[in-house]
Image 1 (cartoon, one colour):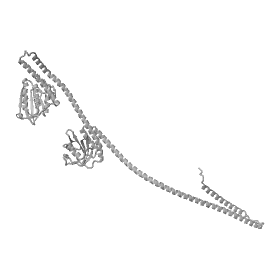
Image 2 (image 1 turned 45 degrees about the vertical axis):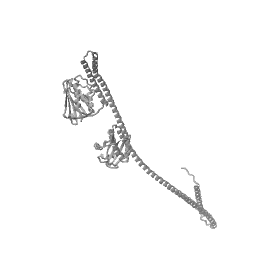
Image 3 (image 1 turned 180 degrees about the vertical axis):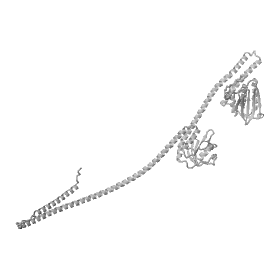
Image 4 (image 1 turned 30 degrees about the vertical axis):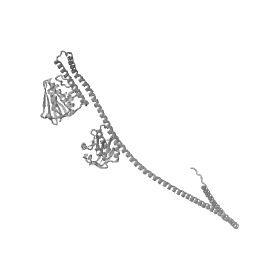
Length: 567
């Protein structure tokens, strides 16, 4: 074990103890020798020396007493010194112990003060820790609330993202509006019913076009003009574009009286302005509470509204593009059709005019070559042939020009009240000369009241209709047959019918009867030419005059063409 060096105070105490122990040992030693000397001088005297020795003995005893007294004094002195040393040592030790105790007490007091100070520090630290724990607990609660809010926002964003993906898949505007309404109900659990008021561009008004929880008949009669829309939703509610919660629904205005259902307790409105125009409003209705929609619902709908406007703009753009593409495709098809018809037109014109031109050239050549030999009657006959051929060419050109004017929209229609019976009589009279060449009889049958009926029509168009139907009947009728022209009134209309005794129309030819350049199985009975345009021109002109035409026929039993005009 290590030996610790003694301090000066400890060394002094140790020496003092050693000196006291030494004096005490000397006192004991003197006492020992004192009693030993006395024991040796107490031998019994002999008889012969009694008196002599007695005196010597007395002297010796006196001396021994003195020695003993001196030794006793020395022993007492040594003992006293030893006791003094012991008591001094004890006093010194007590003093030292008192000083140590006092120092220890002072040290304990200082230690207690330090402990109290440390305890106060610990208490302060404990208070700070408790405060920090409270702040930490509050921070944890705040973080938990933030975490819940973030989770809710993440869920809302995921829901909104899913909704946006759903609405972005829609390109058709009506389906988009229905999808917007249905997806909006996913964002607004408080919404019980919903509807969409949208701008009808074709009729320049606003109609309800999408519903959730409502039937279509609920808003079938609600139609708002631009002015009514502005008064009700801008003037009354102050809506200029955004998200609003409305609890007041005025019913005493002209616009409000158009709504026959009871108003909801509150409604959340999302407006859709596109390029400065109000394209529509989404209504989300709640019939239970006027405070059903919270501020959080409004915030969610504001984000939703941005996607609504983007999707609506995209749908409008795509719809416009699709419409443009459809129009371009239609025009391209029309151009292709016109190009095909042009080729057919040129082919028919070249084919149908080749023979008449050849006849004209041949007749003119004969007249020129044999003019000096020909009689006047022969010259007139040749001239008549040339005139008839030229008239036939003129009819061909007229039909081609008519169909071209109708298709290009350059045909001028001048409506007037025309007595139909009179117009029919004029055309039939002009057709008799053509019918006579084939021995065909034209019969006119008019109802008694037909002569007083007039229709609103263009004179030239009406003549072309009757003439084409009549000449078509003559062209396909066998020689020496009868064609009947009938005119009779019906309910709200007047009916013109032309019946022949020709071969009739087959079931295969019936669908293409009124088509342009139609080539049917029936052939002209007198070698007449056919452009395939006559009935097509008739149908177009009849429909231009708001009438209708159809054919009733059985193959081998003739055909009846019926035309009705409103009166």
